[in-house]
Image (tube, rainbow, N blue to C red):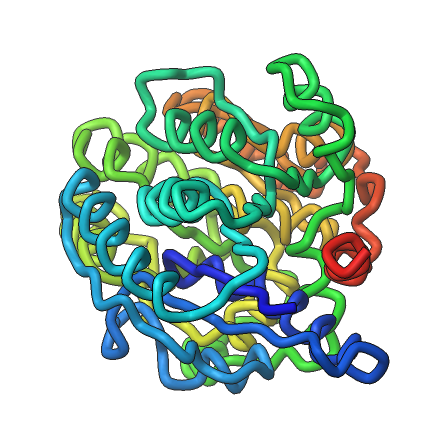
Length: 362
């Protein structure tokens, strides 16, 4: 069996790494089983730090489609063209796509046009906001997929309500937890913590990536000022890259109390240590919020919704939208140790990849 695993951006590699390890383990009894890791981007993509694949303990992609563009429509068209050429020249039994990127949707469309079985990892997630490009991607990918691998009951119920056959839906668990459990003992204390004098449990991590948040600089300034004020003598460290580092750095310099410490982006194992040992986290990333729930670290998400509602219902996450007042309220609770009780959601047991491979080889 030839499995093609498609990654569209850096976070996808964290989710496919456990599947690659599970495939390699299964080869002991199924020597005909093999995989190819395909990346939609370029080999010199700056978001792929040199240590990433060593940190995840997987080999780099065998194939790079070389697509690099800021236009979602251009990404879709170019990935479709490049991935079609790949499939035409490489016999493939099943394609696994991850999450909800434009490149993910493009690969899904080409797969089905070639009559190849399609599996969607982290299926059934929804924001229910059709104005979001990613929501359209999710609907298309789930609609095309032969196998829907969901993280839990909520995502499975969504897929069912939208008409997916029960025979297509598999509640395999949260694949991100496979990576976290595998690497938890391998976290490395980043050098910047020593340089900045950060003590475990006495700093807040701030990450930011959403374009809408970065574009509204007045509101972002109000939220950053609130964070600094509520944090008091607790340092706020922000490992940021690109536009986020530029915008946050500029606003930080305009604050009456420039209290956010911006550092260079961290490698996977370093960032894992930083977030696992934080007093709390402020982020706009669903993946970071999931990691915070796994580590029982208080987390504030700068969004009005989450595709992973179990991080709010069961875990350590709260949603504040883009409201500085709500942010201030929850930052105060975080810093003063008054956070809600939280736990680990169902099927966050680190065995999702094992279940997926068993389903694929049936």
